[in-house]
Amino acid sequence: MTKHNNVVPNGHFKKHWQNYVKTWFNQPARKTRRRIARQKKAVKIFPRPTAGPLRPLVHGQTLKYNTKVRAGRGFSLEELKCSVAEPGMLQQASQRNLLQPSAYRLITAERTVI
Image 1 (tube, rainbow, N blue to C red):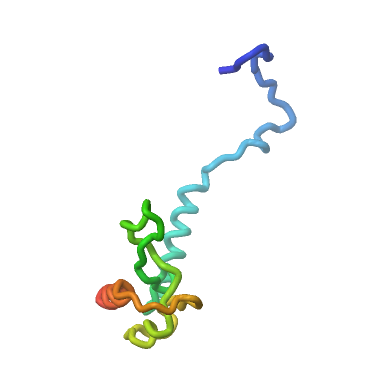
Image 2 (tube, rainbow, N blue to C red; image 1 turned 30 degrees about the vertical axis):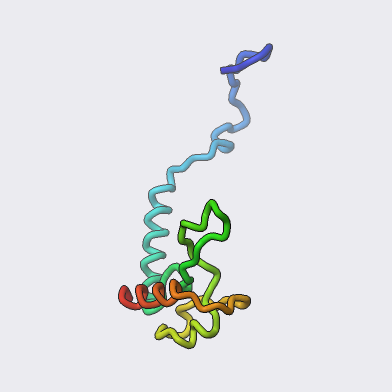
């Protein structure tokens, strides 16, 4: 609905208006193409996870989020040395230096899936 004292919209389409209309007819084909590309990528990098290197489980910092678990930035060098994962499967953090048991839990859980 129009508001205020405006002209009643009755579009007089000129100048090849079909060229300025965005259509989504290629959406199903694009969905199929993306799915096939994801499958090819998963086959190509098989032992590694498709979503990138694994990240540790950490808790949020503030009172609002400290009960929720989220993906951290990466594992410390000590955690990487203790893990049984292959190189390139885990994300390395540059500033973290504390060992967290949740990180080991993630490593062992992901190893059982793979």
